[in-house]
Amino acid sequence: MGPVECLVLAFPGERLKLAAVTALADLRRAGQVRLIDSLVVVKSASGEVTTSELVEYEEYEDVVSEIGPEANLLGPEDAAEAAETLEPGSCALMLLVEHLWAERAADAIREAGGRVAASVRIPPEHVDEAAEAYRAALATAGRS
Image (cartoon, rainbow, N blue to C red):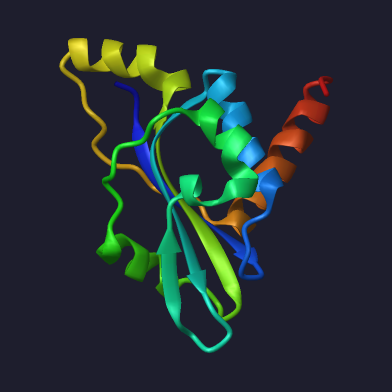
C-alpha cells in the first residue's frame, strides 16, 4: 500500500460543489489516489456542525459511483476536529486517500527495511514560495 493521508478540503458555503467531487473522481480514475473514506462536514452560519456521506447527495450520484466503495473509518471525532478549522457558513470534504502514484516506491522502501520516519505538510504560502523558486531555477538552467 502507498502512503495514506487524511485531507480536509474547506470550501465557502454550506454546500459542496460538484466540481470538487468530480476532481476527486478524476484523480481516482487516473490511478493517482484510492479513496478509502470520505466525509462531508458542514458548519452552519450559527455554528452547528453536521456530517454526511457523499453517497447521501443525489447530485453527486454519478460521480460517486465512479469513486467506488469506501470503508467507514472517518467518524465523529474526525468530523469535530475538521469542524474546528471551518468558519461558520462553510463546509469541508474530508478524504482518507492512498497515494497510488507512490505505491511502488513505498513497497521498495519497505522491502529495503525503510519506513517513513516523518512527514510534514507544507503550508500553502510556503508552497507558493517553493513554486516560484523552482520556476526561477528552471529559468536559470535554461528550461521552462
